[in-house]
Image (cartoon, rainbow, N blue to C red):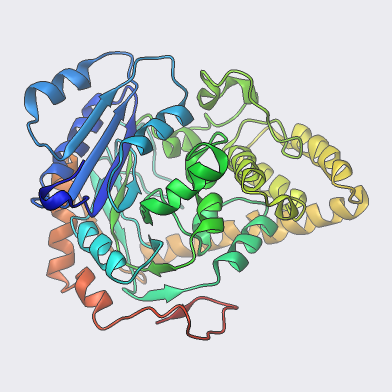
Length: 425
């Protein structure tokens, strides 16, 4: 799609969707409410019914929406690839059909282009819990339907050594990539040209089973100019069928072949190093290894910390200890590493990985309970339009804006920096 004077949109917000029509409609409405012709919204629909298609054709006349319906069968990864094919913006942002955006994300895309960035990733993503998710509050987590939660953020721009961060991620067992300074397409901004480079190299935009972690590692091999901002640009929705809800309800467990991510994939080659146990952690790592191998980084695959992966799997999921440990030792032998050393690494990883994570969860929750950490909450929200408005009001009330965050900042990639840790610029 091109607008006046053959100018491409500055930003394409890309949404693959399937069978979550009420949430998708709400998200579509909220994004198209942004009154700017430089925005493009892409929706790739693979639902069992054509209800969303009917709604779009009958109710939306906005030319900025690019919608396509592809009937089943179509795998999740193929749906994501089809969605990316539709995008024509200079920058792309991938979100779920129950997510939302801060309207300032368009300003962020324009700023990224002005500074010749390949990627701009947000370190702060507010969460909106839709009603009827079926989740119950615990000591370490709070679940209240219709609530937008905004954690404190610094509004700082940071630069990091992405290659080093990827290595740290792999040495962390390949899990919890959001804790590392790596470029993100899912809830982040990436130059469309980088995605095209990936497609040219491997024949697709996404592979594996999890498109978010696959894209992180693929983009990390392509993007040269990446910045990180501690300011909210998108909103993460959690609805009854979200991946996060599945994990909280314990549905990310069982046989690999039982996962909905395998639907319509045909013959799928599961990584021989990763335990064939269906949980979020193994899905992430299998997809991460698929990305590394596709991008020609087999050297990094050899650095995968299987004992730490096993520790995180067992620490986060009940009833999978025996198969995870059994296959951890098989994987270690395939990598030519000592099972004895691996056993000791596993014991240490269990203490310093999930153990430390549990401690910090408890400490963060205690801070919230005691009012030591500022978190903005807005209750009684029913749809993504209300959520987006609530976020905007909260930011304005506190005098925050994206333009203030980046005022006077010019990113010069030739500057010499100590890249051992992320730094402000």
